[in-house]
Length: 81
Image (tube, one colour):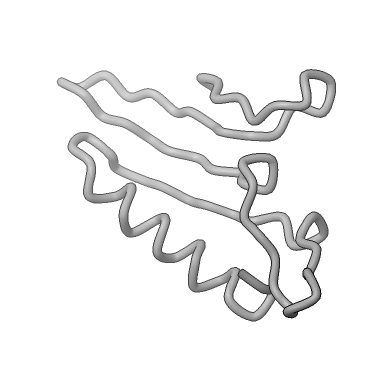
C-alpha cells in the first residue's frame, strides 16, 4: 500500500467490517506516518498502523470497542471503551 491507496484501503476495511452482524458503526484509520515505502515505492500494512472503532448492538446492548497500537506493549490491542 502507499499513501495514495491508504484511503481506499480504509474504506474497504470499513465496508467489510460493516457486513458483520450487529455492527452499527465502524471507522478505520491508517497511520500514514508509520507507512514506509520500500525500493518499489510501496509499503506493507501492519497491525500497529490501524486505529479502528466499532459500535456493536447485540440484543439492545450497545458496546463500543477500539483497536489501537499500544506502544508500551508494542502490540495493537482491542479494548472496550
